[in-house]
Length: 307
Image (cartoon, rainbow, N blue to C red; front, top):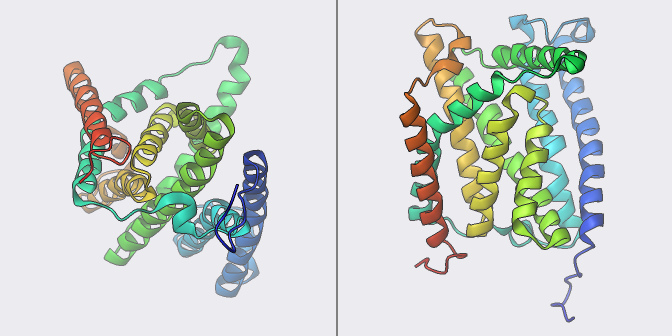
């Protein structure tokens, strides 16, 4: 097979996924270390004390956000960028960053908006999950882990000023939207598709990994469905921009709800109770979302009807 000058053939899909995992491990170590260097400069050695970052002390809130951002960059953003570089490809060509079209941008917005009631139902259903008695120790561990992550999330969502809101939008919505879509859709899903030559297996397998790696077991189902939705948007359109947009809308909505609740002096825990529909509202949400996905597919490169 002939290749253009100065363009190397892509490495084996198995090797690419292995290298992605190695880069992720190295990236999270290096960037977390860099983050703690910055924290040491900001706070001194007291930042390494017990519960300094996780104790909820407002003094260390900015430090916790720095670690969160640096960890996301090291674990999710740097690995796929290094993979493209290591394969001798430009990022936009390796992963696909076709110029966004207004119609598809609007469709992604509608998909995310109309799917919210159904996604809320899946979240409520998932939270009611109870493991059998013989798995009680596992159930206890999962719930403790869930509570620990929820405590950290509530600390990070604290907003006192407009600047705090913008930082949270960057940290919780923009960085994960770009970094996680590059990692899971661009890196993992793309590699799995080359490995299995089956886009549906690749999409759902990548979505499973995407959900599992967040270690929030009682939110596993909605995150799995979100990952699969982003995967199909990426596969049909051939562009990561739309998956990133959907991810940003989903996370950005959570930041906006948290800001609204704090403005109204309501507890952040109420963010999980923003939707209340009758059963037919959830069914309608599902049906409309499916219809929008079908229409999105028809209007993409995959559907060969895009003007």
